[in-house]
Amino acid sequence: MTHSILGLHHVTATVDDAQSDLNVCLDLLGMRLVKKTVNFDNHHVYHFYYGNERGTPGTIWTTFPYKGHGVRAGVKGAGQVVTTSFSVPGSSLGFWRDRLKA
Image (cartoon, rainbow, N blue to C red):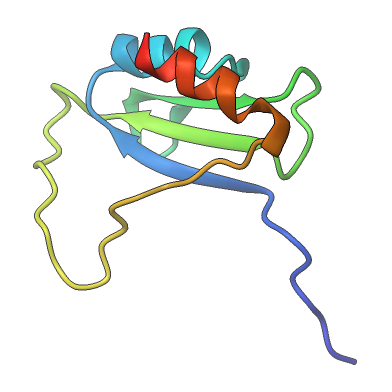
């Protein structure tokens, strides 16, 4: 029996400041905070879960805001992810262009 990956449950990113992360995800991108917990490896660091209003798998974006918690800043190197993209309906591109410019 072979298994196929049909999609992602969630994607996780490390970020700097918790409040800035909340501001971007909630206020700018309009995501919902569906869960707030802590990093299991560093209980002083939040683990934010964003997604749609139901927290549906495949809509989840999670972050670890590490500012001030002893994690060194990342360095550019091979294999580093430098861009993350979100998809939106083509008919909403004007809305998003205006929102991001503002």
